[in-house]
Image 1 (cartoon, one colour):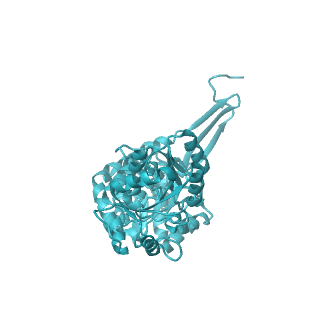
Image 2 (cartoon, rainbow, N blue to C red; image 1 turned 180 degrees about the vertical axis):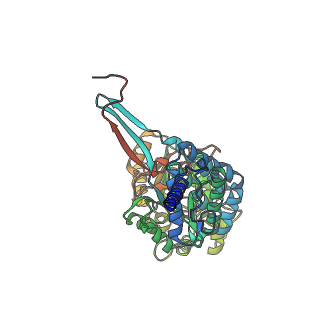
Image 3 (spheres, rainbow, N blue to C red; image 1 turned 120 degrees about the vertical axis):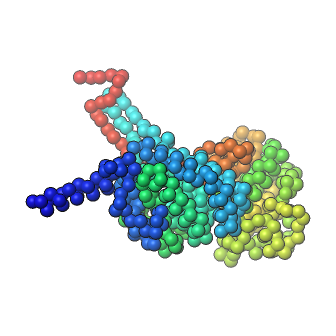
Length: 481
């Protein structure tokens, strides 16, 4: 009997630890969680997901105030490291600019929606009360890109944890060091603030194979993929709920009514931002012929290099686009001067963009280049501008923009493009939340789910919408006995 009592007592203590009701109930710690290599880093997928699952079982029972505490710890902890992350990302990946990465990191850290968007919906009437609430999925499998590694860690973690989930993060091998640093730091900050371990887990050696294994794991409840078409396709064919951010080739339309000075400023500022690696960045300009030359001249005056020799343009396309039609990674996100030097094309000054006046069938127009190359195409009228924009966007329905003072043109273009993001008279990086004037422009959006239809993701994206009915009440307007 004594042995039975001892066993029962041990079971009771373990149960209290796992449910967060022991003496550390305010923190939710548990001594039985797998630690791996520490601070959320593991050597294999199974151990990592097991640790994240244990953390989620604790997190899901905690009040919303606990999730808010986690988010605040992330914001407070990473704040002093923004410049460090920007520099380390640039150094490891060789892509983009430190200045742009600082802006993106601030946006991801301070402008990502959290618990505050999870307000319930309630309907009442003679048939009683119906309530909808947003609850967690469990462990989410997330995959990040090399173009925005830390930004995606911060943005995804804040949204997903605010929703009550924990996260397995599949790092891109091209940004594995800074991603691991970010994962470890996030867990360090959260543990110090709440005592909860492994809210975000990852592997010490990321690989495509480990991502594939993660996607098939039975304890992964949902997938969120920010990356290239191949990995998005894998997620969509996994059989799990998936949010996928697919390819894009955003056209920027400019009609004859546009403020050309403003359009030139927006196009130059946005297209050079982080060397064009944002999926929302303007990848080609489609302009009415009557204003095309003026617009081009004004952009060049701001710091773009204009290629006029057809041989240089063809050589550039041949060098930067591979035989399979994809941009060559050697040049993705690189400085304009780096690309020009590699191509042996002369230039003056320190150009931030490479431009050329070509027709719509040029491969530089129809390829999502992800590098500071911005071709311009002329069209005789607005209808042909819009038709060309639809064609070169390629049916991705990702992002498009227009510069116009004609409301009908703006409305028609927004309707016809049918993209997840549409920007009028502004830089397209505004669609990610980054503002040209230093202010945020809407909520941070780094995972733009076009193939799966969610568009710019928020905390709600990573929840299950649950319905609760109470037919016997509750309505203050009437009561029938």
